[in-house]
Image (cartoon, rainbow, N blue to C red; front, side, top):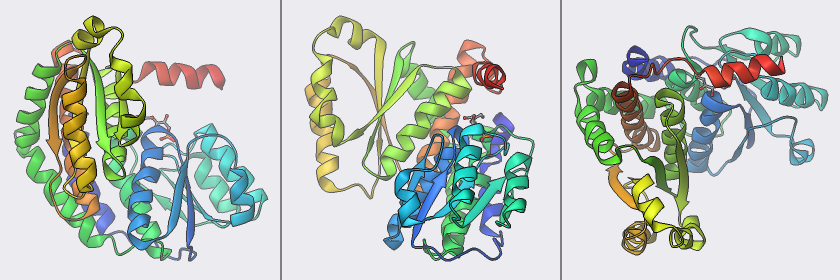
Length: 329
Ligand code: F6R
């Protein structure tokens, strides 16, 4: 997993030089995918937002009813190509005559794409899906670009690769390692709660949570400002002796966040500080949306490895996920 984390800049560079081929033009996009593949859809929503395109992500079975009438371009993403929820979306989309694009290492998704003459973009195999973020999100970004649903992504992918390489440093000796060691120390044995700002911060917070879950096997949750200002801040008052000791909040700040969101981060910390642990804050770097997002995500990768190392846990296997998939098969 450490090698895969260190490979992120190369993955992003690979995507920067990818030729996605003929992709149908689209002004509405639906990305379908689960887990480490589905997060590419969240990234896509940010990139499409730059072009004013409607793009949403579907993480579940079947085609959403709105897609029957609005007829988006379906971008189906599954690293293995065998995730049943995503395959069920593809089946219904094909039956409804939607145009589609498939992204996977192969698997059933590649076969179904061939059967429906959908473009299939093959990403390199041999990784855990969550460790292939640069390949998957990068490919989806290039697909959106080719569909005219997002601006050109080559320069942003190249910038994101440079930012990631700088933060990771050779053999994980860069700033991300120092930052994650501090965060791990501050978090201690507490449940991690990741707060992000609307948009980019929310996508980052979600990925932080899942990387801590899967790599460090750590209990982690996420929420977004401003929405949590309308509910969650009230929920720290009843059992502060427990929440102060057992929950640690890490805030993800983005230089592009609206000023009012920034102010809300400060006020939120003041209001809840007595009742819940505040561990620290991480700020994005870089210019493009993609680079700023990746700058936050490499710290999550480093922290997940750091927490795993502190517990003597192997970050690679995700036995409960595999067990569930086997039981359903
Ligand atoms: C495992 C991981 C999972 C998978 C998910 C879907 O590393 O991140 O969340 O991504 O179970 O599988 P794929 O990505 O093969 O469609």
